[in-house]
Length: 151
Length: 145
Image (cartoon, rainbow over all chains, first blue to last red):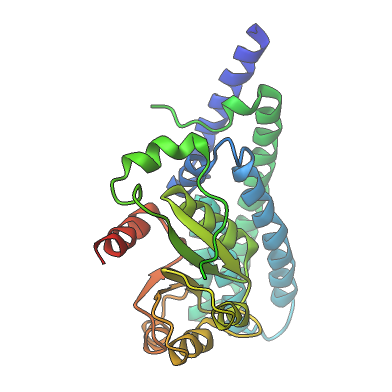
């Protein structure tokens, strides 16, 4: 019982830090609110789908950034898809960096694109790691404790 | 012929029954998007407010559903999809005299592109992702009609 309470406190703290550190926004809360007894792993399922899709896009963008000259239209198109997917899970920092990247594409600024992409990859990897740890802990804590928004 | 999906879960019944718009009869929605994540999210949002939901992966699947006699109160359709995109699918549905409310859902910001999508026969066009704030007024409008 005490261990469970400790797990729950840890889970709540982990969740709150994702918002406090600016990694997640309200869209993640919407996903949490949709989760119910009939779909107890909904949030994790959606996040998993996101990372499956977005990992492919990251690789595609990386390859496109290696070409010379850069095709800014293509880069913008790929990042548009990536941004959409990130927005859907509430990935706040990554979404902001996607927007910045697209602005550099519009300006034809290759250096800006590359620098922003490095930041994006870093924050993307950080959020992915934190969410994986969060869901792993949530599974240990039990289904009742999955992502309830504090009142 | 109405096509339905599973209804809202028991744990959300309190919220759905508190919504005076949705408690009387089910409304049927079709979600058309090639992204499985979007189909999942939009289906859950719609189910949470009482819609019964079917999904299609592209415009052709959506059009084929109507060709087989399916009817939906409302269709949420993505603009960019393989096989048949949202613009072509919307044109095809309107040519078939589909009277469902058709709502475009796109991540495109270009006014020109959205206008082309609207001209295809949409009633509305929203930016992804759908939210409760966008869905509830649509449900209220269906209830009024």
